[in-house]
Length: 181
Image: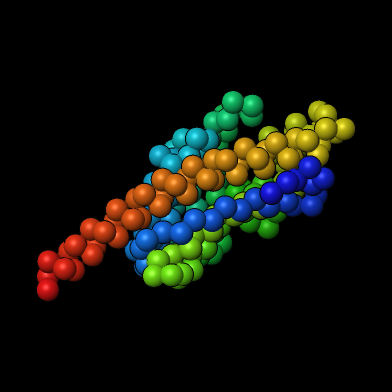
């Protein structure tokens, strides 16, 4: 995917996909468990549910601590905006009405397993990227393209790790079911 002409106002997206040898019901607990995301990410360092939330539900909030070599360290509050077990899990960063970004996992049954798509859509709210663009507006297209490339690279790594975890979980589930027969 190439984003060389994208501007932040275009709210560009990056998406990656993988196939997982496990059902959407087996993949769901992995993608909806925010505590697993930092171990699968090079940028997200830690997360914690807020307001007494203990799991995903529309309206639940969580705090994310991030670090990036170019952007430094920052903390965000994310709001769960979609929670459909076995189908989709999404959150908006900072303000759901005007987010910095919206992230989404989509699960689809395919070929005896699950196609897992991971998408990020950049928003126009004030962020490290928008501050960098303010300092060098003539480089906006390059800055947006670089950020999307970096995010996509990290998303690929995240999917690889979530895939391993879900397939491991799925094979344990199959072994448990075979043992019960």
